[in-house]
Length: 111
Image (tube, helix red, strand yellow):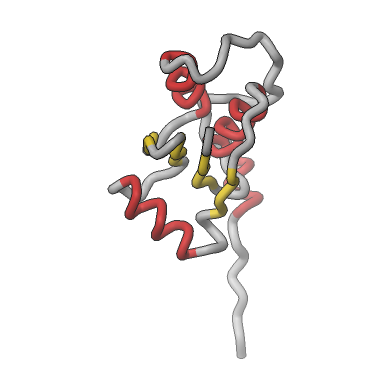
């Protein structure tokens, strides 16, 4: 199975996708859409929309999905078997206000 996950480095939704793919022992390309504009442009072109995360599984694009939605897709298409393995993170949640504050950039003034 070929999996390309278009993800933010720090994001509740993106982390949810990561933990689900790892839970099922799936190898995937973790594609950074924040620090590489070409990756973001590729995601938008392939998904037809600007929201993330997006996960491409064997050519099928799942756009703007949570880890829970990715797992439902994998299970309903018999690509993985059900697993009770712990994931250690939320699979269907965005970042908290505290997480956003940590990611916020500080204004730099040049005199």
